[in-house]
Length: 302
Image (cartoon, rainbow, N blue to C red; front, side, top):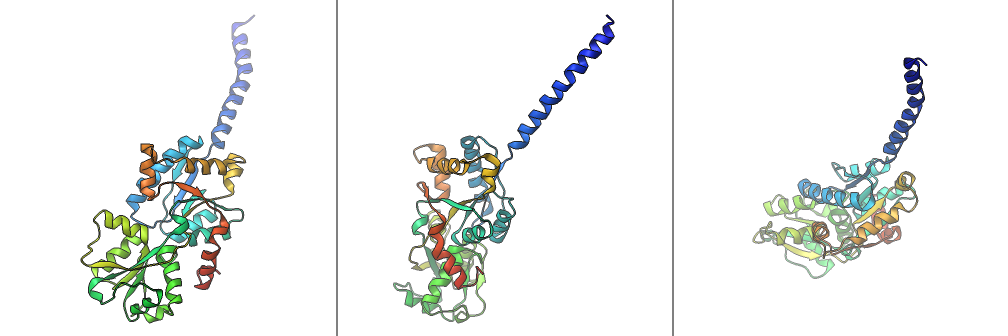
C-alpha cells in the first residue's frame, strides 16, 4: 500500500475528531461567562476597588465561576447597567435597589448586612453655624435659612430618608438658604460641611463613624446634630439572567457564599470589616416597601 495514501487517509479520519474536540472546548469556555458584580459609588473609589476586588476573588472561589467587579460612575449608572444586564449582582442602597427591581422583573433582594435592617442617617453641622444638637425631629426647623447639602441625589441614607424626616418636621427644600447641594458621596458631604461650603448636611451614619474612627474628621469644626429613626437600607440584588446563565439554584449559592463570611477567618474578616459588618443576613423585596413609598413621595420613583 502507498505510504503517502495511508497517512493522508489517517489524517482525514483524525481531522473530524480534532474539530469536534476544539468545538466542545470552545462551547465549554463560552458557557462560563464571568459573573459581573457592581455597587453604587457611595464613597471613595479607591476604597470601593479594594473592597469589591477582595469580594470578587472570594466569590470566584466559592461559586466556581469567574467573578469580576465593574465600577460605575454614579448611582443612576448602577441602576442603568443592571437594567440592561451589564451587571449581574449589585450592592444597592434602599432606593436604588427598589428602582432597579422595578425595571427588571424577577430581580431579587437576597442579602443585607446585619446593620442594614436598622440603618440610620446623621445630620451634621459646622460648630460655628449656630445650629445646636437636637433631641426631637421637630427641632430640625433650626435648619431653616441655613445652607445644606445632601449626598447623591439617589442616596437612601444621604438624601431620601433625610428629606423624608425633614418633611415630617414641616420643612421643604425651599426653607434652606439658596439651593440645596448634592455632594455625590457621603465622604464629600463631610468634607464640604467641615470646610464651611455648607453649614449642614446629611449622610450615612456608618460612613460618619468610620471617618471619625479613622481620625479623618475635624471634630473641632463639625459635629452630629441629630440621628434619624431606623430604616432598611443597603442590600444585594440579583439579576434574573444569573440563573439563565448558570442554572437553577445559583442565586441560593450566592446567598450561601455571602452568609458563609465569618469574622473568625482572617480573609473573611477583612471583607466584613471593609463592609462595616459582622455578617450578612437574608432579606427580601418586601422589606423595602417603605423605601418605595418615600421614593414616590419625593418624586424619585414615578
